[in-house]
Length: 159
Image 1 (cartoon, rainbow, N blue to C red):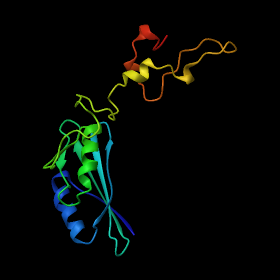
Image 2 (image 1 turned 135 degrees about the vertical axis):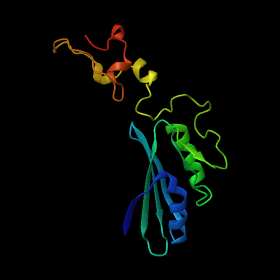
Image 3 (image 1 turned 120 degrees about the vertical axis):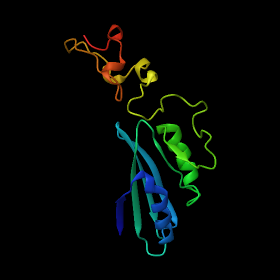
Image 4 (image 1 turned 180 degrees about the horizontal axis):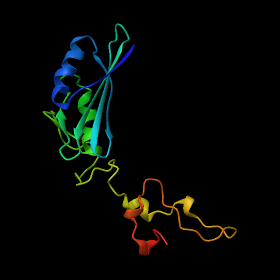
């Protein structure tokens, strides 16, 4: 049985404690998703006795992405919260070890946000942009994940 539940960010920690008390002791997944206007956090836990799966989903604002840490409820959440914090910029309040996990230096723009330009992508030749002699000249294609507004027109963004 799978059960998904949307939870207000203010009730996130309380609801997670209740789910744990109901027998969902195995942390299966904790992930973050950038939804542009806000960020979504997905928690999936399993009751090992019954095999029932519970999924809790909450949203936090993009302007102040904060939610309570679940590391005190499931110890395995600590590692995943650090990863989400590094890559999506979500702050897990009350986390026992908020040091960066992946990025050595915290940046102003977390790398997995859809709004974050990826300069390496702009500088690297993308095979899909190759021109052939048989085709008429057309506007070069941009690499996947690169928005047209990130490219300076002088560098070949649009003709």
